[in-house]
Image 1 (cartoon, rainbow, N blue to C red):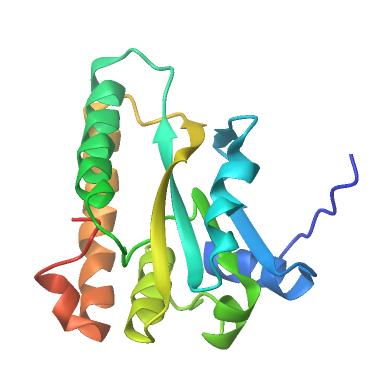
Image 2 (image 1 turned 120 degrees about the vertical axis):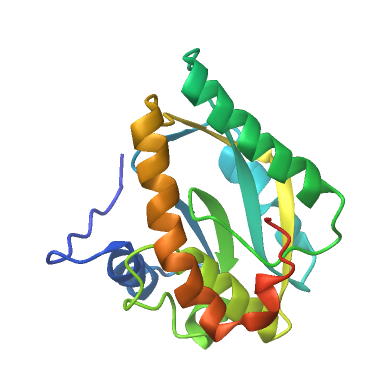
Length: 182
């Protein structure tokens, strides 16, 4: 279908995303994850805010088809965050599972920091926000996701976030008190 696949050597997500940024030729660079299935209108919706030249990045949402109790709980947790972000004119956090950036903003910040094995998208978002880039929430840009289905997998994910979050907050202490995502 005309897709170019870029492979990286044993890198973490930040390094792989940076390889994509380096290879991209467009003015807008979009991201989703391998465990996501974008809705048919996702690309149109995730890029729509870029009609405004002031917008540097957009964030979409997760949906799920799962019915297990843990997966539904995870989805509700995200929906609570979405309700919070929907009230914000600007946001300061973009997850790469449903994201679009101006290529100039990504390259101007040096891309994702490969020293972060996890939450590299949050660290980049806070850098963009600190540089006064405008990021917005685009709830109509939906990707289906398969959430964890066991309580242990949920706790493992939260533990990993708990490890990497202080690494991010160390760089951006003001985000420990308030961020549009939490």
